[in-house]
Length: 486
Ligand SMILES: [Zn+2]
Image 1: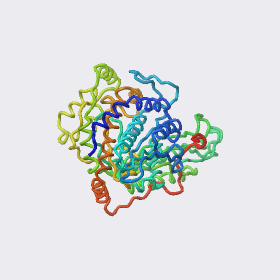
Image 2 (image 1 turned 90 degrees about the vertical axis):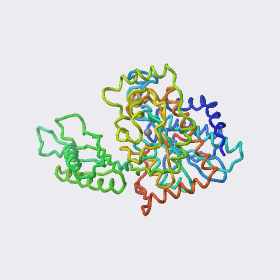
Image 3 (image 1 turned 120 degrees about the horizontal axis):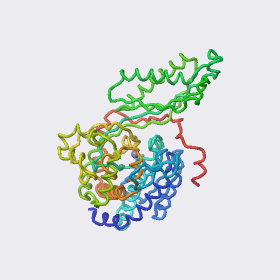
Image 4 (image 1 turned 120 degrees about the vertical axis):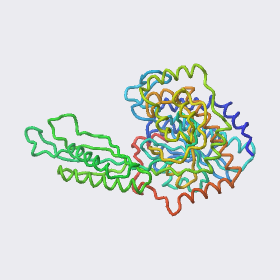
C-alpha cells in the first residue's frame, strides 16, 4: 500500500524546485511545436533524475518521453507546455500589461500542467526506487495541444501501445474529477486563388479570392441549420488578400474548426464544408485548395481511474489561501465584466446533482476551496482536447484543480497573469500529489488496471480507433525547430 504521507511530504518539500521550472516555462512562453526551451529544460531535469529519454518523437522535435523502471505496470503521465500567441502579459498584475508587443503567454496554464505532471512522475520514480517496487512511470512531453493535436500524432505513432493507464490534469478555477467527454474536432485551411485586377479600371478581369471566402462563410452559416445541435462550426479569416480595396484580391484564406460529439459526425460535416468551398470557388471562378491542419477525437471517460483520482483528491485536500491572495483575487474579479461567471453557466444545469451550495459558492467566492461532489453526471464539454485520442487507446482519466480565481475567462490575460503566481502554483502542487498517488495505486494494484481496461473495452463496444489524421499528414512544425533541439 502506498504511503501517501511520504509522497505528499516529498512534493511539499520540493515544491520550490517545481515552481521554479513552471515559472521558467511561463517566461519562455513558446507556442505550439516551438517549445524548444520548455522541452529542453524538462528533459534536463528528467535526465538528471535518471529517466531514460526518447525525443523528437512522431515528427515533432519538442515531443519526448522520460521513462523510469524496467518492468511492471506502465503508467503514462501526460504533460503539455505550449503557450498561446498574442497573450503576452506580466505576472501578478490587475491590468492588461504585456511584456512584449505581440508576444506569447500561458493563457491556458500549460506551464503548470506540464510541471505538475513532471513533478508527479519524479515523485513516483523516487518512490519506486526507494521501495524497490516494480513498475514503469513515463512522463509524456506532449507539444502543440493548442491547435496542434500533438498527442494525436503521438498516438498515431504507436507511442502508447504498451501503456496500461494514462493520467492527466488541467488548471481550472474549480477542483473536480474531469471524467467527462469532449468534442471531436477537425481543423482545415481553405485557400482560394483568383486573379488580381484594378478594381475600378478592369473589374471584369479580376476574380476575387476574398469574395470566395465570403461566399463560403455565407454557405456554412446556412449549413448550421442542418447539422446536429451539438456540433460547432467556427472560422477565422487568416488571409484577406491585402488591405487595398482598389485591388481585386487574388489570394485569400479561411481557417475552419469543426466540432461534433463523435469523429464520424465531424467528418461528415467537414465533407459538406468542402462542398461549400468548392461551390464558392465555382461561383467566383477561383481555385480552392483544402489544407488539412489537425484533428482530435472525443474523450472517453473512465470511472475506474476516475474513482481512484477522486478518492485521492479528497485525501490530499484543497490548499489554503492567504488573505492577501484572496484580496488580490477579488480585485482581479472586477476586471471580468458583467454577468454570471463562466463556471456557473457551465454547471448550473447540474444544480440538482451538485447541490445548490456549490453553485452559490461559485457565484460568491474568490478561490474555490472545496471539491465538486463526485455526482457530476457524464456530459460532453463544449470544447476539445487531444487527450481524447489517448483515451481511445489507453484507459485515461483526469482532474481539474483550482489554479485561478473563479470567473477567470479562458485564454485571457487574466489567466496568464495567474499562471506564474502562488494561486496557480497551489493548483499545480495539488495536481502533482494526486497524480503521483494514483499512478502508484495502479502500479501496486494490477487488478485496477484490468478493471480500467475492461471499462474502456465496454465503452468502445464495436467502435475501433482510427486516427483522424491521414498517414501522409505531418505535424505543422516550422522548419527552424528541427535544427534547434540538438
Ligand atoms: Zn489547455
